[in-house]
Image (tube, rainbow, N blue to C red; front, side, top):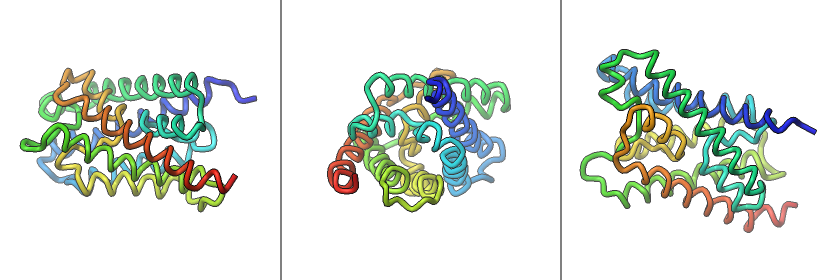
Length: 225
C-alpha cells in the first residue's frame, strides 16, 4: 500500500510549480513591462499544470487545486478526510511557492502585482467574477474527469488539463485572473497581504468544481463502471 505522505508530497510539489511558474510569469511580465503578455501567462499556467499532472497523476491524481479535490469529493472519489489532507498540502505548496517568489524577484515588481495574486479588473462585480471563476473551474473539472478519471478517457497525460487552464486564462484572465483554483489565489495573497475580493476565488471555483464532479460522475461514470 502506498505511503500516505507520497500523494500529499506530490500535491504540494504540483501546486508549488503552478504558483511559482504561473504567478512568476505575471511578475516577469511586470519586470519586462509587458513582454510576456496574456498569451505567455496563459501558457505558463497551462504548461505548469500539464507537466505536473503528467508527472504526478499516477501518484495523487494530479489535483493541485482544492476545487478539483472538491469535485472528486462530490463524485464520491475521495473521502472527506483525504480531501482535507489534499487541500492542506495544496495550500502549503502555494504558500511556499509565494515565499519563493518573494525571495526571487525584484521587490518593486513583485509588490506592484501583489506576487501575482489574482484580482478583479475595475468594473467587474464580485458576483460576476465569481460566476466566471465557477464556469472556468467547471470546464477544468469536466476535462479532468473526461481525460484522467473515466475508464474510456484518452491517455494524453496532462495536455488537455493544461490546455483548459490556458484557455481559461486567455478567455477571462484579464477580468479575474482566471485562478480557477483557491490555492492559486491563497498562497500569493497570504504572502503579499492582498485580500481584495479574495472570497471570489474560493466560492466560484469550489461551486464550479463540485458541480462538475457531481454531474460528470452521475451522467457518465455510473454507466462506465
